[in-house]
Length: 142
Ligand code: HEC
View 1 (cartoon, protein in one colour):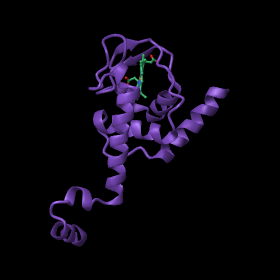
View 2 (cartoon, protein in one colour):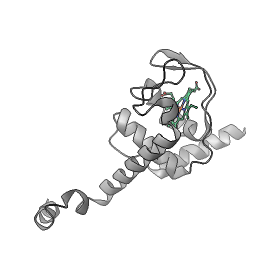
View 3 (cartoon, helix red, strand yellow):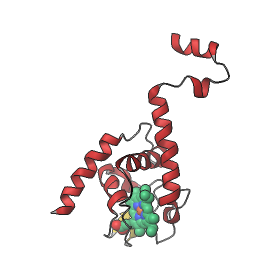
View 4 (tube, protein in one colour):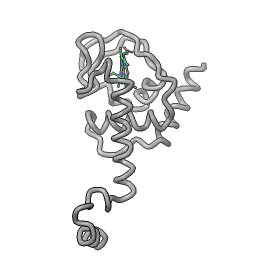
């Protein structure tokens, strides 16, 4: 509490940028960079509003498929090609892989979609993303 009030007194105009905690700054970085990566690599198909495109590309916004986050982390890097149900609707086109995305890119994109459209308030840390990616890489190699 004391820190917050000193911040307010010392930097009334810069409160937003000047006095955020490390965690808040990290969350903002993940979210903003995740948004940029989403715009560049995903919005073509899933659209800026995350609502997908008719029967071709499934919605991420409000998707019940987001329940299994480890699977989503893998799909972002490795793509997916199997018929799936999203909110009771069937989709069966392949999603291409994004092999060029680093673990941190994947963590930031995951953070963006789960914060924006999945009711999450916390980040998906790069450690969590790396763990899921390592696991699915070994499964894919089998
Ligand atoms: C070329 C179009 C295309 C691009 C680009 C694309 N996707 Fe997909 N995505 C699909 C298709 C098609 C499926 C369904 C795949 C299946 O049936 O297995 C899908 C499935 C998904 C799903 C699971 C289903 C759902 O809607 O909840 C998520 C989440 C997702 N994509 C996120 C992303 C993210 C994040 C990116 C960017 C890194 C991305 N996609 C890029 C076409 C695309």
